[in-house]
Length: 155
Image 1 (cartoon, helix red, strand yellow):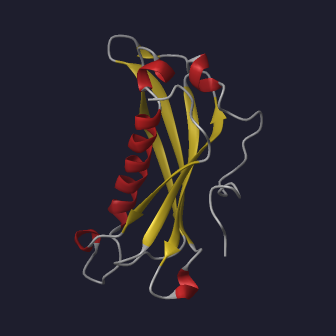
Image 2 (cartoon, helix red, strand yellow; image 1 turned 30 degrees about the vertical axis):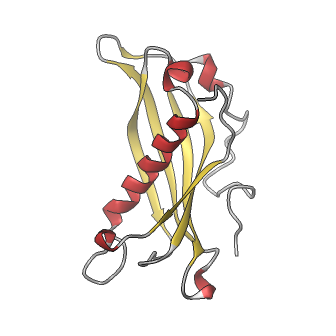
């Protein structure tokens, strides 16, 4: 496990049959699971203890902007990037992009863009300041909700 993250961080997944709704689209609740999966994969790269010490980042707010459908057999890239940091909370941007599909016209489509707000928290202490070890990853100005160009190839 490394002690350094590289942003944007990205993982790839395939859409599975059990993630579909009766109309053969991915159920909207699945997108939150995929975003969380990407963050868990990020935690395999760097020790969360090294980044956050004795506190844990917990989701405080999730804003999801659904932009295109995802279908069975699609290959997806989930990118995560730092957006903004406050005293006790921080914002990560995330997006899901179709990078493989049976219909080539769909390749490159951004299916979802998310704004995820986290609070640093510890049960016995409540909210805590964002540790400097994680704060250093954040840009001086919020890059916004559009995926960074090096995270996805927009069609």
